[in-house]
Every structure is written in C-alpha cells, then in structure tokens.
Image (cartoon, rainbow, N blue to C red; front, side, top):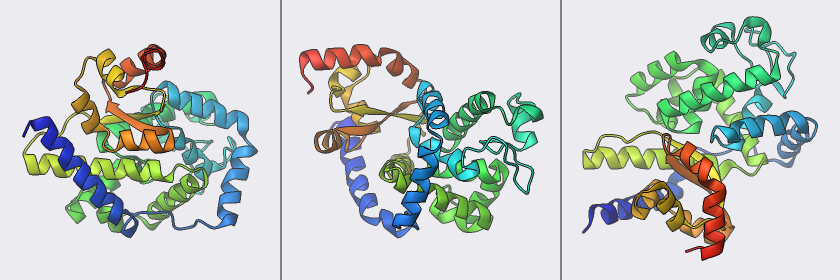
Length: 284
C-alpha cells in the first residue's frame, strides 16, 4: 500500500474513533437557551468591534471563533480591569503586553491590543497545535501549561487539565460554551481531535511531527485538486491534513481548512485565483 494512502486510511480511522469518544472528555458544559442568548447578545451589542477583530484574525489566517476569547475575557469592554491587573478587551497583563511591545497604557487601545493578541495567539498555536490548549495557555501562561503537562505526562488538554488552576479550566469551559452559542464548537473540537490524531500517528509511525497547522474556512466552491495544484503539493498530502473534508464540503457546504503554517499565507494570497479556477473548471 502506498505511504500516502496508508496515512489517509489511518487518519480516517482515528477521526471516526475520536468523533465517537469526543463527548466523553471535551464538550460544552452549558448549552441552555439563556447561555446562548447571553453570548449572542454580547456580540450583537458590539458589532463594530467584533467585525474588526474577525477581520484582523482572518488576515493572519486565524479562525473567527477566537473572537470569543475577548468576549469571555472582557465582554469587549476596553476599560475593564481584572482583580489580577489584566486590562482591556484582551485582558493583557503588563508582562504579556511588554513581551510584544505593547506598553502598559496602550492595553486599552483596541487596535494595538488586537494586533498584539493576534500575533500572540498565532505563536501559541504554533507551539501547541490546537486551540483548546491555546485558550488555556492564554489564561494561565505557558509555564503553568508546561508544569501541568509534566505532571500528567501528557500533552493532551483533557488529560493534563486536572493539574491546571480551576480558573483556567473554567475559562476553557466558558470558551467552549461561547463557541456553542456561535455555532463553532464542532470546529474547535475537530481541531483538537485532529491534533490528537496527528500526534498518535506520528508516535506510531516513528515520524517526526510536521510543521504546525493553521486554519481558515473554505466553502464548497473550492476544488481541493486546484488548491493542491496552485500550492504545488500532492492532493493526498492535502487530504492527510484535512481528514473528512470532502464529506463535510458535500454535506455542509463549508469546512475548516488546515494547512502547514508556512503554506497558509500562500493560500490566502491565491485564494481568489483558486476560487475562480475552481468555479470555472467545476469543483472536483
């Protein structure tokens, strides 16, 4: 059997297994109507800020659901200060802000703080490879994540989370609840499970982990074949990064799309050309 085919079959198998067991260890904890209304009302009351944040995320190839982070952090209130001294929409501590050149008095500046937050989140994703761990690290810091992983002897959030501060665990729960309210929970959980699959495959096959994956969204108008051609990669490799994407595009008309971080900017630059070719030649 060809290596690529073997890899795809392996990933599809584990994708199916993880989807089956996913709810056992990671899911929204509050799906009540009142919870959904609360989060949606916050977004509706801050449409301009939300749009700016979503556009800033999209420019860097980051998913829009990260707009839920400042929503649970501050309700998009630029003037809020936490009991620990975190300030602004993104609730930056002084040390975290200074790390990226954001001065203490600029933490309330939505434009500058969002620019820094996007870079910070992108760096965390390169390190951890899934958004659940990124949200936890953003809350409690990379040092606490490292200690928890070491204590649990695992890099999987649902395993090491019991060693994290209760505040951080609750923070992640709020994030998942917010993503449920915005209809993006399945995307977050799929991203988490895909990262787990990749680690399991690499450990089984003895391969070194590849470059971190970044994500964006595509709709059914895109041809995966043409994406592969434009990026000069094998279609089988593209599918290995995106198990189940063909079915999701066919059934839902859209899907989260994963590429190595170094390839994502190229895709975003060629996105309109790729879509134009796809529509012209017919999606295959």
